[in-house]
Image 1 (cartoon, rainbow over the protein chains, first blue to last red):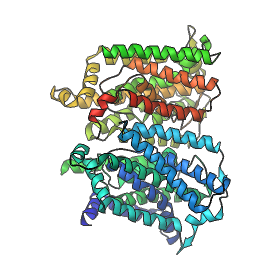
Image 2 (image 1 turned 180 degrees about the vertical axis):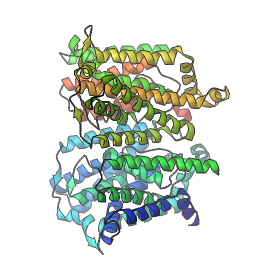
Image 3 (image 1 turned 60 degrees about the horizontal axis):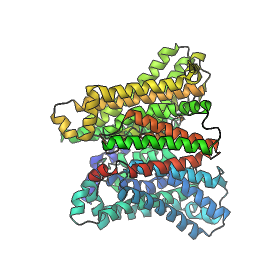
Image 4 (image 1 turned 120 degrees about the horizontal axis):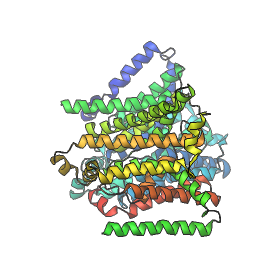
Length: 313
Length: 312
């Protein structure tokens, strides 16, 4: 536990979050209210699920540029299964996550066994998935989804929708998986030095493939919940912008760019940081387009600060 | 020797593609359509000139998506303010080189992995392009500017000539200057090059700046062809540019690959897209196909060398 707290503090994400919230309270009107805090929590829930997978992938030293397009595919698939085919809710949820797992399996196998670099593989599969979702949906948006499906993520519990609790549960599981399980250890070892891990007898191939499977499954679940939240299934959901948001959150949360180091709590702070910024930009009525550039600015600052600190140390 | 055989086989493959296309599609092998294919491929080709050098030094430049939008946005907005065309274009090019230099700085001085740096710089550029005109497109440029994209010189489209010039510059740098030798050496073995006392950081800065320069030219040419700048117009070109390089035999394992071959790769991608267009294949299906091609080609080529360095 102490190690994790130290990692989080060292990454500075907690400090950045506190500073941002203070700036928000002082300078942004309507920021400091219980309702607005609930908005931020609601908006952070779904990215918090997706960021777990990206954290693991970055820990292996790879990257998943297809993540946002898995979200779009999952959204399209959810809409089709729930509305057009009229499948029951449990089946829809299971099938959507399974589709994600399949995509991840394809990514993982290409990267691990065909030795294609992760950024090329996932760039390629991203385009493929986007094409497939567009072709399947024929560009249509499916709205007014069945209430039974909407209930999965929208049921109110103590003032927050169920999607927030689902996210909390998954983050807890993710924390256990990354920081307390054999798989997490193997993941770290693989990210630090894959050859050494392999020579020590770790099943590196399985770990690497499983990481991409988990990442895409979580992305599919995020896509499902996002579809429920906006009550519309469409292929344009997610996309490159979402992928970038998730990568930013993971890196701002202290995930090393060189593999091996990652923190679930840090990544969670990362998500909260970008969502607080988005919230402030919305409240101040500034152009939403600023958000993209600001995110980029933050990620660059964090990288540079991290480098300077490691040089000084 | 093996490389030369590979290049001959590759050229034959290109010719076979063209012949097959000619048989399949009636209008493909007309001079008008072929010049059109080259014109359409010119954006990808110019991008591929810079991308080749980046991949040769074991990098990647994902920022061209953003730069293809940002640079012409800078030029376009200046032009619409009444700034002379040449100065506007130079300003766009400077924006591209500046962003490229930034990529290089992050990679060379801070050792940040290229795919992260260039992804971020690309998103920032994209964001800036969106902010500059609040997410709207601009258009209605001076006739002389539009002429760059749509006019002809001595019967050859200016776009095609521009592609040739950029290819020439790229070939000259990589094949006939000491810098070129060092670029290939750097891709082969960085440690040795460093020990030789060569300025590795400077070399990386130059390569990324040059890629930014190529992206700015590609973006400006695209906006001149369309007489429009759309803030997300760079989106379709990233995958095609990387595909052009890997089809042209530029190895992701670094140290190998020729600028001219990458341009031929761009022409192949352009032809494939043109044929699919003429056959009435949906653009989204084309993306599925190009995505699959790029993965398969990387798998099939340059594989043996990457295998040795790839994580186990």
